Amino acid sequence: FAALELNPLYLHDQEESGQVAVLAPNIPAIYELHFAVPMAGAVLCTLNIRHDSAMVSVLLKHSEAKVILVDYQFLDVANGALQILSKENIKLPHLILIPDCDKRPSNSPIMEYEPFLAMGRPHFEVVWPNDEWDPIALNYTSGTTSSPKGVVYSHRGAYLNSLSAVLLNEMPSMPVYLWTVPMFHCNGWCLTWAVAAQGGTNICLRNVTAEGIFTSIDRHQVSHMGGAPTVLNMIIHAPPSIRRPLPRKVAVMTGGAPPPPQVLFMMDELGFNVTHSYGLTETYGPGTVCTWKPEWSSLSRDEQAKIKARQGLHHIGMEEVDVKDPASMKSVLPDAKTMGEVMFRGNVVMNGYLKNARATEEAFKGGWFRTGDLAVKHPDGYIELKDRAKDIIISGGENISTIEVESVVFSHPSVLDAAVVGRPDDYWGETPCAFVKLKDGNNATMDEIIKYCRDRLPHYMAPKTVIFDDLPKTSTGKTQKFVLRQRAKAMGSITKPASKL
Image (cartoon, rainbow, N blue to C red):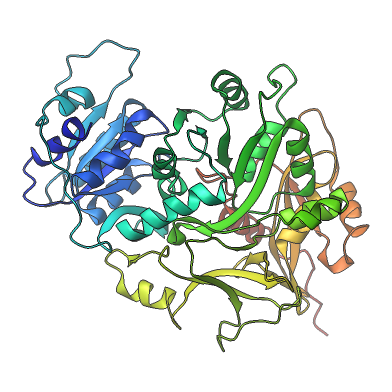
C-alpha cells in the first residue's frame, strides 16, 4: 500500500517535503491520502469543497502546496484557481485528477490518480517525522481571502486524538463507520486514523442524504457515525418511505450547536444513541464529550435531553478545559450561572496558525487556547455552552444567549430549523431576531412564533422579529450567523428613535 501510494509524491520536482492539497468529498481516495501523504513525509492539506476558485487559489498560495489532487466534480474549481495563480510569479502545484470510477479513462493530458500511483517504487520505505511535533496536516478555518487561517496539526496531536476518538466513541474492534463528517474538516475529527487503528470498515458517502444514510446503515451494518445537528435534523425528518429499521443501535457523535431536546428524543426513538461533543478546528475537532452518568437514566426525558446537550468534560487526550474570566484568567464559579470563556490546553491543541505569529500569540494569550465561546460550569464540572462571544445579544444591558432562544424556537411543532441574532435597536441596543425555516406543509406566522417564545421565556429574551427563510450553512452544517447578522443589521432599528423636543 505504502509503496504504491507514497513515492509518486517525490517524482514531481519535490526536493523536500511540502504540502499536498486535496479537493474532494468523502471518497476512498481522500481516506487513502490521510495515510499516503504523511507516510511520504509531506503535510496533508484538505480543502473545503464549498470554496470557489478564488478562495482555493488563496489557500494553495498560502499553503505553498506542491501537488493538488482533485475529484472530478471539482475540476473546474481547481482549474479556475490555477488560472488565477498563473498570473502571479509562483510555481503552480501539479494537478492530479481523481476521475469518476464509473467512467472509462479519458484521453485527457491531465495526470490521473491510479496511473500516478502506478509510478511508485515497489520497495518504498516510510518517511518518519524527525520530531513528533512536526506537522502532519494543515486545516483552514475561519478567515478571509486576505487573511486565511491555516491550523497546523502535529503527528503527536493527531496520534493522541485518534486514540482518544476510539475511546470517546466507545469503538470496539472492527467497527463500521459511516462518513457523514467531511474528511476535509479537521481530518474527519481524526477518525480517519482512528477507524484504521481499530481495523474498521469505512463507508464513504459522496453526498450526504437521508436516503443514503438509512441505506448504508442497512446494507453495511453501520455501528458508528458522526455529524452536525443538521445531519440529525435530516435523519429525523426523513419521509417514512426512506426510513428503515436499524439492524442495531448506531452510536452517533455530534458537535456544533447543542441539539434541541426534540431532536435527541426522535433520534433515540429511531435507534440512534447520540453523544454530544464540542471542539474547534484548533482542537483537532472534539475536545470535550458529554459522558453519560448512570444516575441520569432515572431522570425525566426533558432533564436527560438538557444534560445531553451539555458539552461535558475534556476527553482523555486533552489535558484540560476550563471556563475562565478572560481578563483575570480566574476560573468561574461552578454554579451553572456565571459565564466565562471556554479555554483549552494540552497535546491536542494546534501548533499554531501557519505564517501568522500574531494570531497564534493572541489565541494562546495567558497560556491557554482561547475559543471565543461563552459557557457556564456546572457543580459536577461539566461545561455548558451559552454562546459565541460575538453572538451574545445585549438588550437593555441584559445578556441574551442565542442558544437558549433558538432551543425554544426550534421546539415549535412547525419549525424545522432556526437561528437567532441581534437586530440593532435605537432604544434597547439590540433585540433578538429569529430566522426560521418551517417544515414542509406547515404554516406559522411571526406573531405565533413570538407568542410561543414569550410563553416560555422571559419577555426580553423573546424574538421581536421573525424572518421565514432558508438558513445559510457552512459545509459542516453550521449556520452562517455572520450572514444573518448582516441581514438583521440592514433591517435597521425595530424601535423608532424618540422625536426631538
